[in-house]
Length: 250
Length: 206
Image (cartoon, rainbow over all chains, first blue to last red; front, top):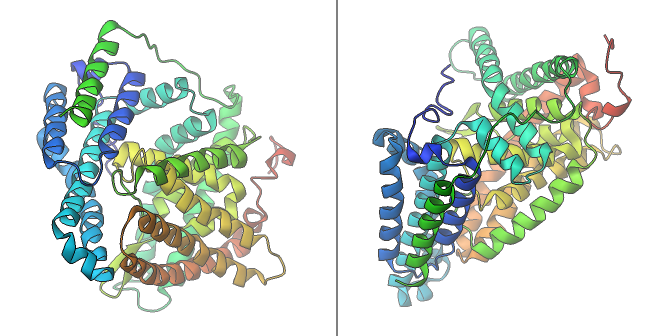
């Protein structure tokens, strides 16, 4: 299976890629908070302005537009469902209320859609302008507990190895149960799940012993150099200030 | 089941985030160095195995496996679920940053409840396993409905529960068959060894 898509674009070089990962995390998080706390009755123009601001940042990252669109499309069914469900659920359960406030409720649905899409776009920006291990080190330096960052680092390292193993066990399952699984499907899949867990369980023991023999003390060594330059402070602050300006002033 | 940013109201997100951070602290306390790789790699397995699709009535659902996570990781399943969600939000934009707490509370509580059920030894083992699998899905679904209701969605969101009941029943069956398999092949995985790591010999145990 393909393993390169995780931080495929983390190696590009652009002003955004060069920013300090800590500032990028803080900026993405603050940006999401500013956008998401917009009331459901917010002026749709706000969302267009946010989109313009985020697009401006995207344009300097040199990320391919098709890639961004694909990432957005991948999660949009869930977002679309939640956004549609809002007016729909009000319509079904409170018909009179819906009839009286039709426009407001539909605007609220659209606001949910826009807020979610913008938040996803910011997350895509964050994860595709930085290599993952640097993001983890930045999280660690932002005082996220070591248990979270170390387990994340292991997840990142082992997900694809285990995915390959799962693929093998799927092939084995299919070759033993040709065609559609008709009877005992739950049992077969349960066994397959158990095999995946067992193998990873065994593997974790071996990994632990080799980590110990290399001097593992509970945390991966921090070997990333991070220095805040003027640009690391000015550009994120400017971006956040503009978002807040849209939110509060316009 | 992953809720994206912007869908649930901010006060709910903030409350859930505070609760999730507190629970990560409580359930992740005093983790030994041996548990860290076990949590990471079993977490990866949890993530991969949950991508297996299961055909139901013309469509397909994917597994959650919070029941199995609760059974084999015990209380450590909460930080593992939390971390897996952070990973998914950052890498796949599945879920969100502000809703990380909400999603962690939903799914982590599912795994945690499954573990509590698994510890009630008065119930026969296989019934416990099926019940843990069922709980691992239905608890997150009920919490999710509650959060949608608080946000202002109409009571019609409760139909989600109907969909998840089917998923939870299937999950119960899968958890049961996985536990039968573990019992046959490697019974000590069911004894919650993560919590007993401290007492395990590090070298030469096989």
